[in-house]
Image (cartoon, rainbow, N blue to C red; front, side, top):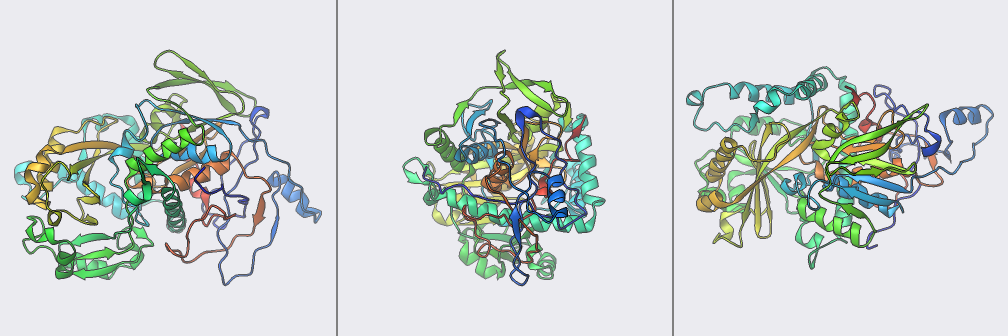
Length: 566
């Protein structure tokens, strides 16, 4: 294939944070024997001694026995699944299929849509900043304030008010939503502070690692007749517009890695004049050209890419080069479960057209279907802490409209409401978070508000914005803001790759690679003692497929204690 060879020899490693429970791997059934694979080690800190290595034991009991007699246990070659069924043809599903197929697994993708990246992946804004959102008390308060503002009558709201958040009746009457809200509140208000800090640190390491992996695949994949990296992957920077002196002073007093989420991007402050020189359209903006703009926070190395293009291009690589099979327009209605003495196993997948797809004992089933994951797990009598956050995206095609270059942005531009990206002859305006069930049709009232706000940003595009297409995607928002990634508790052949919500597409290849290593453990594992890594950044933590280790604790994504019985 045009991609580099798969990684080799990731290792089990001792844990370094007892506040996060380790994953509990049940004994695998004889039909699907796999060794439990703990998290891979962090990269050694340069100031600490070099780690010792040993061959990976088959189990913790074997490790203890070997240590007691002062011997190094031998490695038993693990049994690996030869086949995989990946449910979902969006960014998570395609990346999962790609990484498994590169390891020699026969992969089949099932999806209810007509092709790759047809729903949420099509509606992604495309930002690839090395930044993560956090679920904490501040986020919880912002959400509650948004709820409260929705109750204020429209005639009492100020003219500048824009409800960036919306709550539909479908969510209010949904018990799954309220259980999700309970988990969201618990994760925001009552989680252990040290555990939260630990998770945020390792999630950031993972994000940097995963974005570098995305860049690497973009350099090889083709979109149409062009290299995907040439048409999509752009290191053009990002601007966060600041419209009040109070906010400006607050951001200046905030540690750099928290000024725009929790991140590793280098940032600097720009004056109003510097910002308008970079983006001339701001002078004519009704939103920012009236003296309200105070400056901006600038990330010069921020990346962006088109998630829809990437998903389609990688999907084509999967089918044309790696032999991945697809079954589109296949809507799953349920599963047949075989109860073994120690674990259950999915044995059949039922579809809307009355067919039953058999699942052999050497076949893994991966739920990589985003916001639809809790719907499918419900048929297995399981609760999944994901609720869809419907995002709105206005697509402005510059080739079909007489638009001047000076009237549109040339880089990522955002404020507290809009996130705007530019891809050659297309501008994407992304905003709104709507809890309203699993529908993807734009709510007329919300759509009208969004178009009206977009005209304030870009008054020169008034008529163009009226006729531009608006699409919605369901962002799989996890209650604690972390990916759900790993083995489904109680099942020997079921796995999940879903979440974490907004802008989660940028970690697609990284998440898929972690899951592929769990499903298909590498040969000749070696274990490395753990050490802390205090710093991380886009240059120092570049990803290569040749590395034997991964620089984060993958147990932060564990499903145990998160996916529960109904």
